[in-house]
Length: 497
Ligand code: NAD
Image (cartoon, rainbow, N blue to C red; front, side):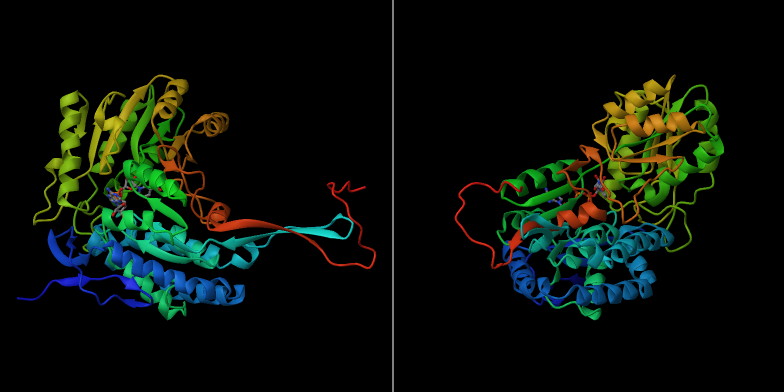
């Protein structure tokens, strides 16, 4: 009998050799088979990783911007060369189709490319002669060892929202990826080493609540960047800030797509399919609620339904359009929402439970509900699966009120040919990322990613300028160099005359 592979931690530039007492099974969701066991870190293992990051910090923070940029460029080349390998690792543990996994790596690479511009991004301000012979300038300095805790649904991209910027700014990193799909993080760690990053600057610990709690409590960790579900995001934010850490905690989502009567319905239907069922709906920017402003609801539903017949659900390595869900438990939970929607009286237009792929994989076909109302759980909850709900309203104002009354505020989209209506929506909607005839408005790396309300705890979004600010502390220096004319005692503030 062959032994199941063990995935261990990456500490101080090498795979950690210590045998783990606790492990968790990693599945291939397309086959339902266990592919590996991942080590679950204890507080002692976390301490080992934080110590490595602490020891590496002083030297890394004093490495020149030129040196840091060279390492970033080398890492960028290596990720690009190995994109398909990383995508294969993602598909094997997450289940998303290969093209989508490859796209995830591309989006992560864009943050690496953004971070390659760190010499420019870290430039401070300078004011000469603020008082006689006095100059003032601002600088931004790294925090120290920082923690990144990421979810299962983007095992490469979400960590890459943070670590390129953190490292470019001179910090050292302890990444705690999802224990459901840990391999992409390990591969990226090896690529950092190959790119010339000094040992200890980038570490990976695997684990569950125990390791997260150890990171939140560790005095060596200066900041926490978390992405995951809302209850855990809130917990991480509250615990981390209570322990004196800077925290950005991105949570769950329920993203609405408003379709106005003048919209191009073919475009809207394509968008609904792509944004609703891409990655089997396991995206924080997936569209899960379509708000159709009458009289177009029936026409839109018909168009979405006809397109759904063409979606092939199956193994992501075998040319399917939509892969399995990440685990059996999650698949069953999503299926239970379909039961709940039916019981609550929503119209089940397409039933994903009927889609049979064969084998033991965690598959569920795409599902469409019409006549969903705001009090139904299929509308209120984040389902995180391939279940799309259509809510019918009569006016733009009703649509806006619906979006704004939802506790989540991650992403939203409006489909219309009316520029004035789109502009009004962009101004009035209480959501962090807005698409206008664009269903998944994920900001480019040089802008910042983040939602409002229950979709983000803390006030700093990921990457872009906000990312640079999160991973640095501002300092302002006021300087005067001795001049023969100086002197004299003055106990008052300067008059600057
Ligand atoms: P999750 O909250 O279960 O897990 C996220 C991380 O927290 C993982 O590393 C996990 O090991 C850890 N964790 C789990 N339970 C914990 C606990 N009790 N205490 C401490 N740590 C714990 O999320 P998930 O299922 O991996 O990911 C899906 C969720 O992530 C969805 O809600 C999705 O919307 C959200 N998400 C949000 C964004 C965003 O940008 N806002 C992006 C991607 C995913």
